[in-house]
Length: 556
Image (tube, rainbow, N blue to C red; front, side):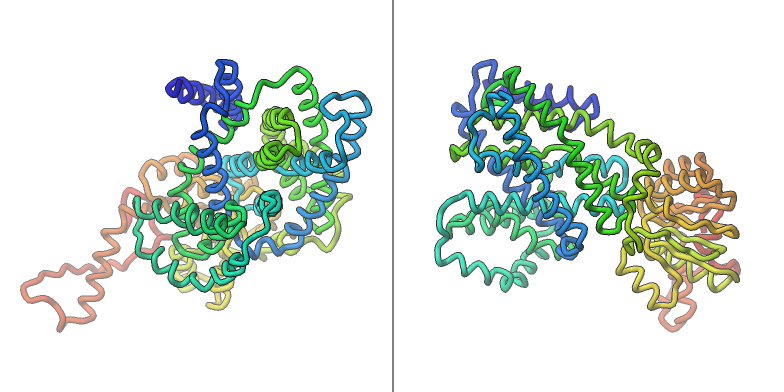
């Protein structure tokens, strides 16, 4: 039956993906299909082992991407904590009421059981939120960063529960794990030397499964907690993002096994589906609670609404909590299936609502703005840019070089936009006029102050999609000045020209010419070091900067 398991899982995942939903819904469905064919999770112990590995690597990946500073923001740590408390206070009496009304799955439940279910329902889906943010290009937006921060806090709450649920008193040797940060320099040296191929993947698996999971389990702690902490320990390394990408497919593949094991627990009855539908009908309360709390922390109503809709669903971590509770006998196994069905239905509704959240905001804007508290959050106020003549989007090496060339050759105010705060601080210390903002974020353009005398916009962001998005936003703002952009590939140059960019500078095509110009300058400045017999060509033409190149076909 092994081939059937793989084929059915693949087909279900593909069918669900074709309608724009996360494949995990298909994997849950595949589990139900396999159950109807007579396959149960008890007959496939390796599947449960792979599922455990998937959860462990999920926590390790979260740790690798965790910016601890972001968790100390009030809207993140306090917002997530208050929402967790509020969700439990809301769900417990509602579930109790449903039990009184004759819902058999809740009949006779104790307060602790209702608390467990409410806790599982309080989570929002990290997988779904990240997918929506990546598809919209809003990962670095304020609302996206707030949503991801809240999700990470929820994940930490889940890990704490998983650790407590283990039930064993940790060994006295657990205190020795407090010395783990002291090994960080040694771990980083190994990290530096493992390279970029399969050795990097192997290093990640050793750190997650051995140093993290196995070591923590050996001293009586939850292995998932160990994976998360070791991931956080590695998060400060320059190659942490590369490592996260390297183990991404291992994590995703093993998580398929987790979702399959949920479906293999049994088919939902009509009563289970009905109760799951009732739970989905309660999601708007979760959304409204998020909106209210985030506006209390002085975020704009638009930012709060976008983040709240991104969090308006049930979570795979709720499934993990329910799975642990069912395994321990704290909840009937049927609740694992109920939450799985509720999770799937919530995704069905969340996807179209997230696509239309801007229209929802426009419709209720007048009511939502009444929730705002002033002064607004420092990161959510209008972006004041003064009255620049030149605007540079992206202040990396190319953007800062263009800034200096403009400053040397032209009069008028120049402004740079950069989304990394450390780069903004650096440029300001160097005397450049730079403000923080992410031009690939729709929210940036909503908050951007108008500049009536703007003549030229330079798109110096590293990703073509971001530059193309910026062009579209400039057109929506009826900008009539000139636009120039950098590209890496010829096809990107064509799409930018078709979208309305006036001049394009192809980095790869110009790299050779720029390199020769640099060598000639260095050699002419140092004639004694010329190699005998070498021939040097010279030109009276000065080097052109990126901003003066007119096409990608003839860069200088």
